[in-house]
Image (tube, rainbow, N blue to C red):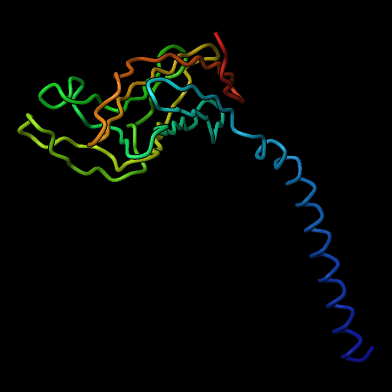
Length: 188
């Protein structure tokens, strides 16, 4: 056998092994992809001029991420920071809040996608922390202690520097059911 035939056969063998390996990985990966591409459970509600869309993603075993997108319905409205005190600043505002009870517990702090800015409100000496006008996405890492039911409690208030504020929403309940391999929203 000359050297060029050996090289061709060697390349053919390597190519065959590579293609077979890719096919095997694709077959195994295809089964994982079905579960991985399962759409994240979502639900939404609208209260006091804000639509809140909740989803659970990256659910593995008993942990995942709970996301809430707060979208004011009217242009020029903003939400208050998650770090705002529960009673606001000098009574003004209510924090954007996501909490869980029941079979699901928080596994970290609530984080927001938007940068906080401070505004001044007539009659209030201290600056008030808010997010820029428009939608804000929050995320909360969560874990389940056991299979069962949980309640997500949502709170927020939206305001406009020109049109005033909406009535604050406190502890709006959204029901969630968790098992070892999934989390789903339940209407109650």
